[in-house]
Image (cartoon, rainbow, N blue to C red; front, side, top):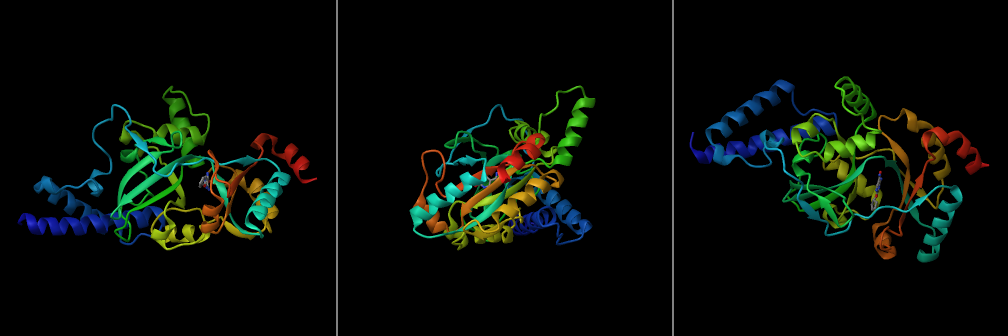
Length: 326
Ligand SMILES: NC(=O)c1cnc(OC2CCCC2)nc1N
């Protein structure tokens, strides 16, 4: 076979295998039988062995980097990765709502999301290919964790369209994986992680990508930095579109008008949180209209258009709950 036709076949194999991998891990909806995927993967490896000069970073064979990094290189976030203001009571949520109504002049819709207890992650795509993954760091400068990010199963390496796009979300470790990891560490006489969030941070910020790959990390993507690229004008549409493009998003969100239905949502998830397969530490209220978000802008540290309502720590939950609701 000549190089030209090998190049064409490899391009097709890479795109097919990456799509099949995303569908399998993100939507639990495999596109092909396992043995078909395996045959394709074997063909890719054989061609790459015969034509090593045709291997690309996005190839499924390159997902786990070879060498262990000496340290992380730094990434500067063009748009700062802001944190969130926290409130702890219903009254403070109402004060937040009043501030928004005063600034905007009328009641607004909010997109209400679960607050996943993980660490913030940025994913940058160029021409539809995953180019870089980085941590929030101090909001301006984060760490380049691209090699590790490529091992996270529900992060797509290719997008359905060849566009430049940045999305952000939460990287977390499911509770069950956390338990298994700590049991294994205890058996190996290693120190255990205090909670799933620390385990996720320690696993993502690993200099050896093979270690990250073994840690069963996951993501919930919640922000598109440039909504126009996806043609969306609200946060709820952004969540829908990102899911359609292959990102793993959290479906337990709803749009409330002027806090309607919010108390029920909070009570529901303050109770449900123990049974969820991942950790949450509250809910996030975001002005749904993205143009309004821009109009409201940000303070130095946090956006004015969103607030995080933090649940009381799990052990104290019952006591504080009576105080908050009576
Ligand atoms: N932990 C979460 O689940 C979560 C975190 N952050 C955000 O929104 C960003 C958007 C701009 C600042 C915060 N949404 C979330 N759901």
